[in-house]
Length: 276
Image 1 (cartoon, helix red, strand yellow):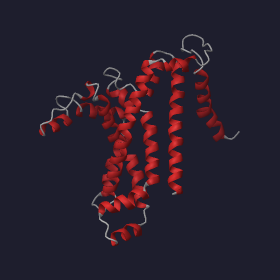
Image 2 (spheres, rainbow, N blue to C red):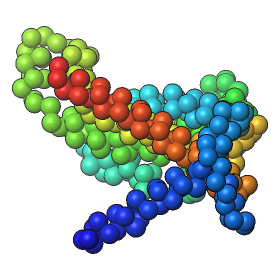
Image 3 (cartoon, rainbow, N blue to C red):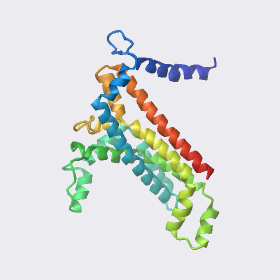
Image 4 (tube, rainbow, N blue to C red):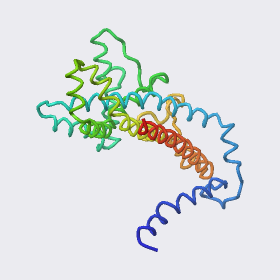
């Protein structure tokens, strides 16, 4: 067995197999484990907190993915133009990606403060009373989405920049020669040329959305009223809070199945787009 294969078995395959075995047991760290078959999986069906975590995660995904695409694409379009200091802006926009979540969460915790936060101060200048954000169950998840998009759009911006720079200039010049304005060039040339890039970004964003944890943990601890409990947060809570490792492992494999299904659908869409 070669070293790469040995490392793969030890650090990837073995933990996955162990987690799969644990998902069929009642392992709680303290006492010896017992085989319970599919009980952990059937219990999920009747677990209202699991249902709430799944709903929250889907809600987060539906907001995070479209907004992440729009912000990343818009920023890439701006930086793809011949503007002064564009390369410095690219670096600045990428800094949040490599920053600590705890550090960025501290910034956003202040920005989202209902009384003194920057966002509500700006809204107040326009005569709008800002919400309580992290203290309001209706606004806590949108607030986390805002922070997540800000913290992660740099990666997708770089992917879009690579896609934009691979579009043949002849296509754009040809469209302009035929009288197309900037919007028509974007609508009929740029967007179709970025189809595969958009599919890739969409897949990455969906996977990241279903794995969201640290933002909800640092900013709200799942509150208020469980409005920001996500699937990964619930896995952490069941595994390390309630010491129900078997149950947490079962939730992990359900999450894995969801991500796998979404990835396969996106891969199929990418292949169809490539055939057209």
